[in-house]
Image (cartoon, rainbow, N blue to C red; front, side):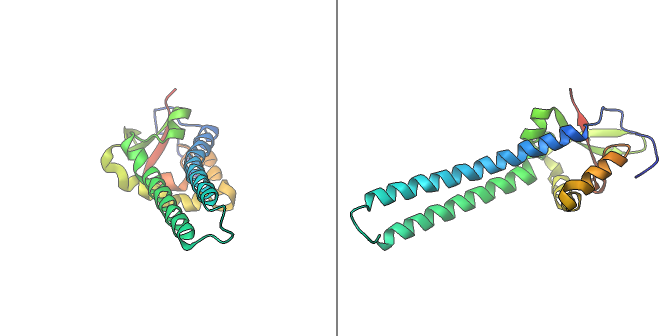
Length: 171
């Protein structure tokens, strides 16, 4: 969107690398939820096998299954919140997907001089801001974010621009 020259001296992450990192992170979160669902299925099968002689399961069957379900949903939600908000800040701007793709979120201290720094534990607010504004980048099947990255000299999405971050390539 901006016609100014790229000011970030570090090599910027490509759109393809960022998309792959996002997909890997999506799979990490989904795998965790699948594991919770698999555990619920195993518990249900065990409880069903124990109760196989009864034609109608007693209330304890449903109560136990509900408790296991609630615990699985809560654990999955806590993991998702931690991963989306705190993980990157605690790992110097790298989620699991970004680490695999060798890219990193950096804090832009001064865009005009190109001064950037690694994320630190105290940058959780920046990560949260990126997460909130990512809603705009994901509109129309991520086309808004891809369009902005493609037309910005620093490959920044709307979320990056608002949170004053940039994603660099480390390889």
